[in-house]
Image 1: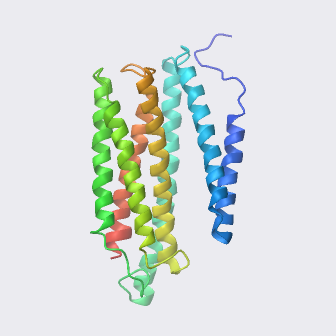
Image 2: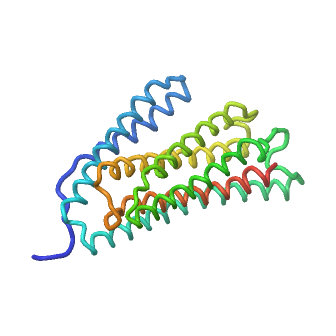
Image 3: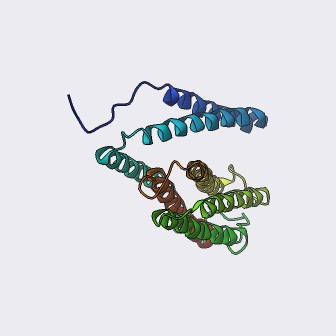
Length: 255
């Protein structure tokens, strides 16, 4: 029966990715308990290799001629649902944050989420990270418009990846200078939960942009075939917006 959709063949990459992610989270638990970072590195490297194989399969599929209008529309709809799931995930974190902070205001008559903890000044590393992420949003948008104009936007795309890793470096530096930890009440747990998950999203977004940069250098992408770049850019702008909410409420409002 003729239809306009591409029926995918069997692939074990999704099952391997499941095992890899299960290994990452399991080794993180062992790391928090025993301090064995080496196992986390091995599990993360396995996930990275699976991502490389998956991107190679997707690129080969995109260049095979099966990506017609209906397939691309389905991919866009699925990606929008993925972004919606990410919005609801961070909405749950912010809901918990506001509930805990407002309850402390009413019941404890306190102007801070947890008293006795020296919060990080929002005008130090957090402000610098805000400038870095906003700048990366500009560079990745410039790369997108360069690609639409049939110009090479690879330099701005890789520059965005450099800004992303600089952001992660400053985030780790901020963690090393924090006076609080995850067990330090509601604020400590929510601070590391929100900023930590945001940092993981920054890492994932930078990996997606890096792979698209490689495909762009290899000539597999052009102005008429770059859905992966558009998905990565939308995801990156989502990461920027989440950080603005984190900076305003988790840093500035609590401080």
